[in-house]
Image (cartoon, rainbow, N blue to C red; front, side, top):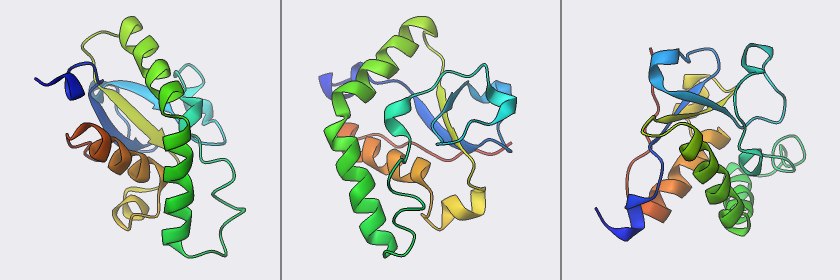
Length: 132
């Protein structure tokens, strides 16, 4: 394993609706919290504040670019948050959750999939979408 990937958490993505405990530790990343996941840890730096709703009239590519730019700016914070979670939940995959359905995620209109692509580019390993 290379230095580039050895310290990175195992990540997958899923909708709140499709999540099952056997998938791993749920990680909330949406702007609004799902009451079913009040107990779930959050990675607040992955929340899409300022991208959804405020940019709905913009082309999807522009929204993706804005979100990825934000992730790049917050990279250290994101890594710190996942490092803290990994210390609390060693050797368990993290399931990045949001409200979007699997269908929306397949159309690449979902911030959790944009984050997954960013992680894939950054660390060189896939971050798949999972379903029960």
